[in-house]
Structure formats: structure tokens, C-alpha cells
Length: 272
Image 1 (cartoon, helix red, strand yellow):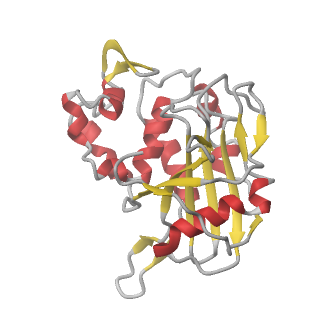
Image 2: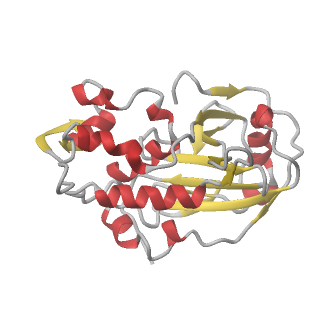
């Protein structure tokens, strides 16, 4: 979380109520990206939960909305977290505080990533990712310039994406897929990362056409969220501080749907 995060210290009594929506997200759980997610060590550890809520969403009051979500009995009995023992466990505990970071959803095209080709991080014709001498950054092995651009702020190419660019939800998704799980086989070409990012992004966000301009607009606000216990310690999406432990809340204010996308880094992936 960065300086833009909000810490909620005194949650109020909730009013929103939530019910589960059973939906199969093909881009995550289906066959579409199955082989790639297995290869990257993510399949079976990245999860999507969907709910419907009972009142109009008011973005200025998002703190209350998220607190109500985490206190709701239906959520507590359906939302799961992954334990170090490699088991899924119901959240089943109310929260004390929440950290929230709002992301941006301005990107409507993969042209956002063209700078990787234009600056030779990825080769124009073949799409091959340019290799480099192996280095370590936190828990990651970095042996190509793509991962340098994504996570090594001392690298010259890091500035290809500005601070604002890095707040885009699609950038977060792309970065997560490129970094993978604890047991991960990296791609030699960038296209699989782009394809999976596009399909997941498209399935999670909601759009509508502006009546006057006839342009497509994204209507879903997206928040990176962390739940804290009474000691101020993070326990959801996990108790660890890995880059790849994440939870995002995507809200459709028109249909009154809320989606939770979460992932857990430690341990081997598993899959059906």
C-alpha cells in the first residue's frame, strides 16, 4: 500500500447486506487460460467471489461500504483465505480496520503496453522478452527486462510506466501474471501475459456507452483492500507481505454487484 491508502480506525454499524451470486468466471476458473495459470503457479490459488448488495453504491462513502462487506454474515461464511498449511479457510471473523487503495480504470486497450515494444523490452517482430543477467528482487528471480520494468525501480526502464500508469488496475493484473506464483515457469514471449490480462480485465470490469459521445466508459471503481485485526495486523488476504498476496474489490454500481479477486503466493498451486 502506498501513501494514498486510507486506514479506517473506527468502523460504524453496517447497513449494506450481501448475497452470493454463483458465477463461473471463465478467464479464471475455465479452460480459456487454464494452462497458462497452471504454468505460472497461480491456478487454484487465485479466486473470484461475487455478491449482490441491496442499496445504491455511493463512491464517496466507500469506506463504510467495505466495512459493511467484511462484517456481513454471508461474506464471513463464504469468503475464504489460503493458509500456510495449504488449505482454504473461511474468513469467519469480523474485522477491526481496513486499508483501501483506489486504483484507476482508464485503460480500454492493450495499446497501453505498446511502450514495451517501442522501447525494446520486448522484440517488435517476435514478441520475445529481452533477457538479462539474473538478479534477485525480494522473493523474485529477475532474468529479463520485463520484470525489471515491473519491479526494479532502480532500473532505467522502470520509468516507462509512470506512477499514474502503475495505479491502473490493468497494470496490476499484468504485473501479477508476469510475476506468477511461488512455483512459476516464466514465458519467453509477452503475448500470453497480454492475452490473459485482457481476458480477466474484460470479465471483471463493467462498461457502458456514453449517450452523448457514444464512447465506451468503464463504470467499475476498483479498490485494493486489506483487512486488519484488533491488533492492527493484516490477516486478509493473508498475514504475509508478499507482492503476490492481493485482494481487489471491483464494484458494478449499476447492477449492484461486487467482485473480490484474491490470490495467495506461498506454497504450490493446485488445480482441477
